[in-house]
Image (cartoon, rainbow, N blue to C red; front, side, top):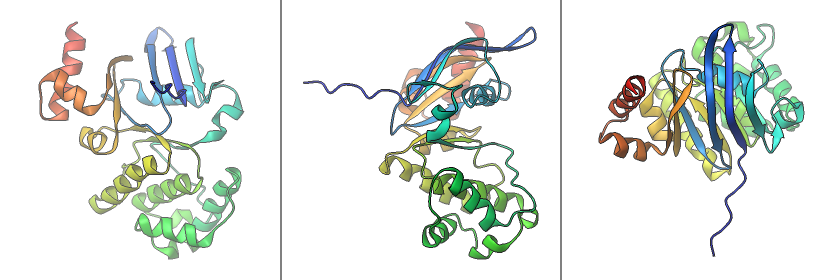
Length: 247
């Protein structure tokens, strides 16, 4: 007997978005199922961040449907199951690390747990002393780690991370990739945008390629390699968007 497929945690159906006469997204459609780690790839201007903004109701879209947990994404309760880290993350400069993390945990309904916070900071190689420093004293890398820590500590079922490796040194990137891979073991889901195809290949079990606002590929990284007859995800990606441009 075939087990029924799990209902998607996120569904995009024929989503289109324009700014004036310029179409940014065209009939975008794909699902994210529970426990899936999905990488969203594309060149600058492909529509990745715009799609996420539409999902989070930061901007309106003209056509299509976006659902989170079966609810329209415009409903605030639909977004209560997710945590989001923007590409350009800036915490309130006047808060300490502790105050910021405590506030985000409270907003997500998660009780403060000092040992869990310290463990997450250690996993990210973020010094415990950062808890008592004001955010204005943080470096770019420390700021990014603070945002990631807040997302992980929210205990939300879906993490939406827009270029989360931005500003991280090689050691921190390795640590973050390890934490992201562990999400699947914890039953979490992930939407992860990155310019690094290698990161998507290492972390994600599914990838979607956006090119000029349209989906040109949806499948596993392995299927991308097979379809383009390549051993490098970077070369496979290039072939994918070039064939789309010429099609």
